[in-house]
Length: 130
Image 1 (tube, rainbow, N blue to C red):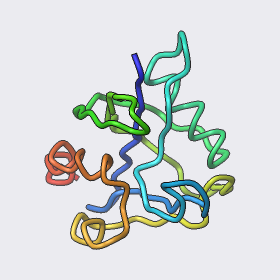
Image 2 (image 1 turned 135 degrees about the vertical axis):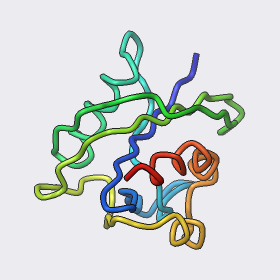
Image 3 (image 1 turned 90 degrees about the horizontal axis):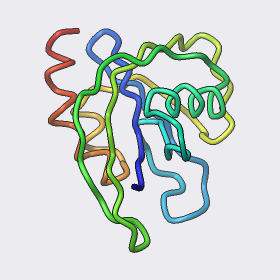
């Protein structure tokens, strides 16, 4: 199965997002960071690996918030959203040009990856609790 994961970090009613480097069909777009699960890897392990590779930080995965599906280049993928805990003080951008904490309203007005926008209904309850 083709699995993608997104890490959803929430702080002060805002969500951690990052803009991908230019290039490719999703270059320059904003996203909830994460990536593809590798063979034999759990979703939580994938998140830890992806955040370390992309930002040089350790994260703590929490609970599964929800899932959606999308098709990319003819391949159907399942996208899981996990709540995570992130220390943003030591970020080293390797695959992104910038990052920020954004409100849902701001996210809806950015050039965001469409499949990630499908996760918003799962994120809204988390924001209400923050």
